[in-house]
Length: 86
Image (tube, rainbow, N blue to C red):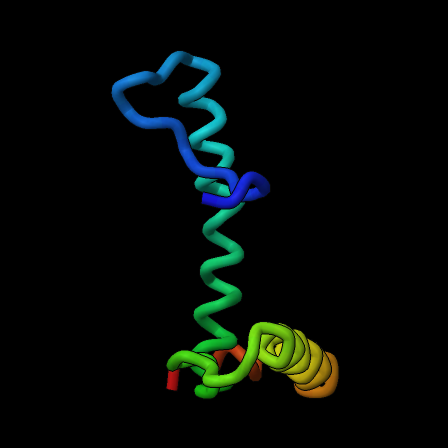
């Protein structure tokens, strides 16, 4: 595990403070997972391993995010969500 990544506390060592942290971490993670699901369904290049170096893969994902945000600005959020569910 990398030092800058957060992970929940184990269930067997939960205090009230740690339980609160786990709940907040979970709530923060859910919108990110939903956003990634939308990106995944629209931009299939991220449905498998990106077969490039780390730097180009990083740029590819950033480019997908920019393209996604641009299409949302042009077409609206409602259109993006209906495209995903169809």
